[in-house]
Amino acid sequence: MSPQALQEEPTDSSAVTAGVELEWLSLEDDETIRWASTPHKYSVVPGLIVGIPLSLVLIGIPIIIASYLQYTNTNYVVTNKGVYSKRGILSRDVQQVGFNKVQNISYSQSAIGSSLGYGSVDVSTAGGSGVELQFRNIPDPAAVQEVIAKEIDTRQQGDTDRDADTDDVLEEILIELRAIRHAVVDETDEYATQRPADHTTDTTTAEQSTTEPYQNEP
Image: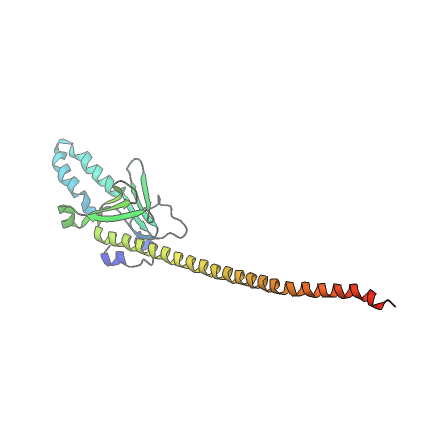
């Protein structure tokens, strides 16, 4: 897969995962695959270099077989929510790290890997000690690092937008509460202003009612 293809937004997940067995992968409803691969096919070359000469004394055959099985039974996946790693020949070891936990990503290439086009991507998490997850011997590690960085930036931008929307909603609620408070205070002041006048009117009426019987006597 070319670096350009890795950096473009995938339109068909089947094209991204072509040639990769992902029956072990369980995704959320809104989770989509951005990149998936096995280790680079040339990553078995060091095992062949060591294993072929030793195969003359049968020691190298297990080395060759182990290198091939490790190549065929290892998968790496990048989604819009995190990174996944699956390894294991007889058993299965699956790791997952969400982008909300990722602190740092880096890639490295050995001399052989640089010449043959493969390397490793390291993912470190906040609060973790060292590398939490590693994509070993993958094709074009620099491009894969960019894919991961792009997804993290997209997620962080989305979180920022949601925080801004929340702040706007809280500001609107605060404005409404202030308006209600002012309306209550104004109504209370108006009632307090009218109350003494009503009390004076009631007192005058009562006094007039009291003096009327005496005025009517002969």
